[in-house]
Image (cartoon, rainbow, N blue to C red):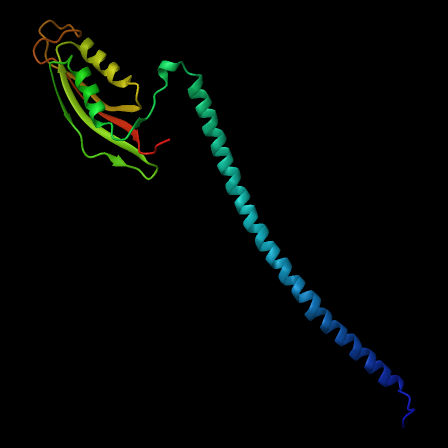
Length: 191
């Protein structure tokens, strides 16, 4: 039986077995790792798409900020305010006392400054003052709003007393009372 020939049936079975073995080897050694690699690359593509979207949004935001800065720097020099360094409380109080000296009387109160995560300090000052004339009160408010350091004048309330002559520019009995809130901006960051 050393020279026995394989029958057609045996040849078909051996061929079928060879095809199955080749198919299993192909699936295990080539197709499965390829599918894993494709899945991994697809996941990386998704992450990259997300990063690209985030970077595009950041670039658009930076473009917007740059346009805003360009618009600010196109303004006349006197309209551009700077942000004061932290702790600017003495300068703020000297400024307010100097401006409010034109009033008949005034009062100032200030809670502790609020320090943001961005290093920006917001110093809020509640102020009230009285004047005998509306024009003086208006002049004081204009001076407060036009300080060379960044500030925001808000919550302004102006009330007039009973005047004898009916003239809005001059109020004789109670005067003109003004209350407001000023927020002064300071920076903890040192450039």
